[in-house]
Image: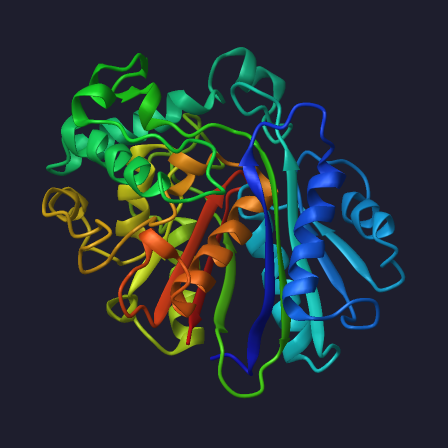
Length: 376
């Protein structure tokens, strides 16, 4: 349960492709907006935490130096796709411990185009094609279809749903709706995933100011980070070269358990969720691992449109990564900002009615998974 950490301000740089614009420049824009929203400047926060994967040495320091705001402790955090969630967790703990009254948390990224490359994998894995992301995304999708009633049409509808939501998000990379037929007819990358069922690595930045809670507002109820246990052959940590053991809980499930316990609530209390959807199957798998639907129930969830914007548990009203793209260090904080707006009733045409409790989830290389729970 939160010791009282609230969001005081947010700022975001759109996710997309921005030519020669540097990652530092994008970070500067997001941080300036968040500080302005919180009404603070130098002296208004006592520590800063920056999530990033590809930005190099002291990337967060470069952003705050450009703003003349260095001098406080600045910690750069890398946890794959969960980097922003990991940075947020450190910020929350800094306040809970009493060391800080307010902290700045931000995420920045400028991703290379094409398939995500990672030094996490040994060279032989990549040379053998064992670490190419669409391949194990596709294998997980095939296993999901084998083990449940999920169909290609269900996978396609995840993309249709998220792109329809993304039309209303001015910070999304892709703001165009697609029909089921268009998604199914788009180029096959790895069977059963077509190009419209996969998200694009891209660029962007997001920033959040946290403060000790004093009264109402949007609070951070939990910020959990967990890594993998050995044993899953299709886990994010061992694509296609681990041990086949389906009895091992995945890191998302571990992080969700910890977050629910910390917040003192259960998945049935969640009103809106932003979950990892690097591909269409990943969203469905995420919902099962987070307890947002029963194990084996993701097909029914999507078939009954329960995760639509007007459904009982909207998932990815922002458009998700499928619409926004995925700048690794910024993506988790982008989710937090979307959920903050949702809880404040400021999400415009993508607003979820009367949302009071929200969940954000990311999972990626390492494997690392973060789950953040917010409430108003």
